[in-house]
Length: 492
Image (cartoon, rainbow, N blue to C red; front, side):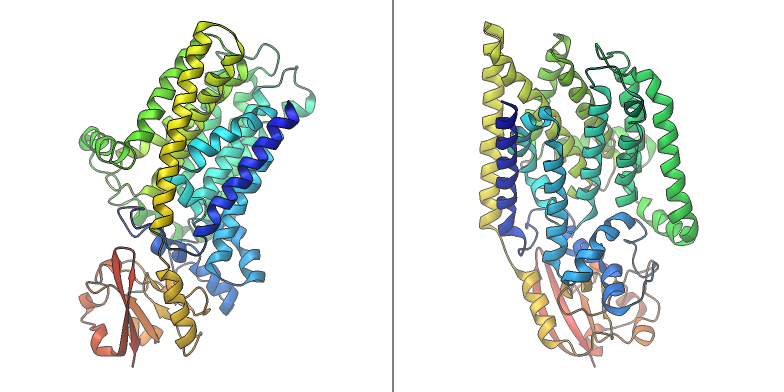
């Protein structure tokens, strides 16, 4: 039975990998987010690393992404260094990181049983599926959190008294929760997860295993130790850049304190229960209420641990509903956490079928029906994603590869890193009153500047300073990228 569940789990992971393959070359979906999101951010997340690999220099002040995501760039370094700075290489690296992490989870038989449900309900969900193959740091952080939960489960769910080695096991979950914000600093809030989980589960101790209260202090010490490492190795050496970037990142994200209830209500109605996601969140609410009922009935302790861990992660992620700017990438952690909670509950509902009672049959029917709804809805969204695929990013990269005059002379603008994966051009973004907006032409001597007609992507960085890109260019070429028209201005 154990080998059978692992085989089914491994096959479901392989099936997931095959589902992703048609999207490694395509554009992000037209309906992905309210902003440019992955259309620009896949390039921006890696522009400094690509400039380092292709041009042997590293400037932390050139873009705002490297300072926020050092681990993400470190993970991509070797693949891009030895396979070339191509978008498909970066996407495949992120995807394979997820696949390897899922395979690692199969070391625990309970997770092997969960895996098919996780694939059906979570990993093929509209947002989680897409961000799983994007060259973005969000999924790397989510994978770190998932592994942190896995090690927390193993630490608290031991069926025997802890050995000396097990008592030191708290450092592993602390490490992976810390790596989540090493990959992207915006996930720093997750450091509260491990102490909170241990504290909550101390009220529901395992029949035989480590005493959660004894782990609380050591978990906080390990988290503090990894935070100190981050501060000493990354924050303090680059403090001025870090503070400058984070000040910009935190501005205009949250409204006034008095307006938070209204903001939360707006985000619940228009984002969580939008036409695209109402069904997922409705099913997640049903699963959460069902999970509470199962928890109160005193079912097995493995379920109790995972229901607490997944629900806690989901509730922590919901703090983002207080943000007035909430693109879909900010909610990847929530959708993964909610999906994991549903996975745990659905597995338990169907597992109860082994108990031949009328109540267990009722739970089985509920679990089977919800699982079927997840499968149908995610299958429909997947078919829409397949039908809507476009390849305009690949087209603009081919264009630059064929026409680029000098890879050392920069291509500039927030869209530049998106368009220059294959040609190895030096790419530098530009934003008004933020980065690289002072004396753009004379300082950088760009060979090309990419901009939308109204310059919204750079907050009018050029026209606000009296620069007419049309007058400075000798030729132009326009590309449709998602909802946006991007013009390539070749400088005279």
